[in-house]
Amino acid sequence: MNLSILLFLIGILGFVLNRKNIILMIIAIEIMLLAVTLLVLITSFSFDDNIGQTFSIYIISIAGAESVIGLSILVAFYRLRGNISIKT
Image (cartoon, rainbow, N blue to C red; front, side, top):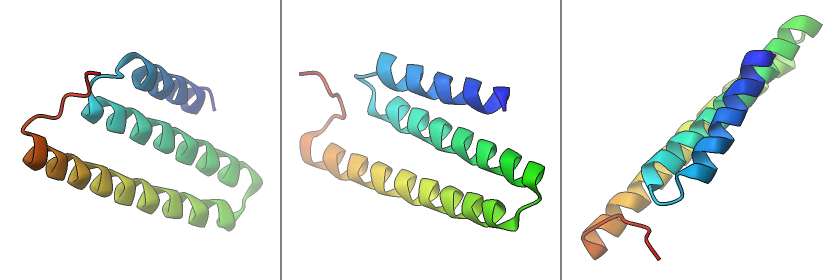
């Protein structure tokens, strides 16, 4: 449980501190989703419940889809503008 909380905090810090690099922001979101998945799995194993394990597989599939959609938008943005900088 402490590991999942630590991973979630690392993901939040990575998202907040790297506001200019979109790839690192996507990685930070993935770390947060995997931390939540780890917490769901830990509680599922402690309560001997199969629904939590099924839900964690659902979270992992959603995280993968989010990652693919984010990177495809990034590629389209790069083709349109020529760079992926988020500088305002």
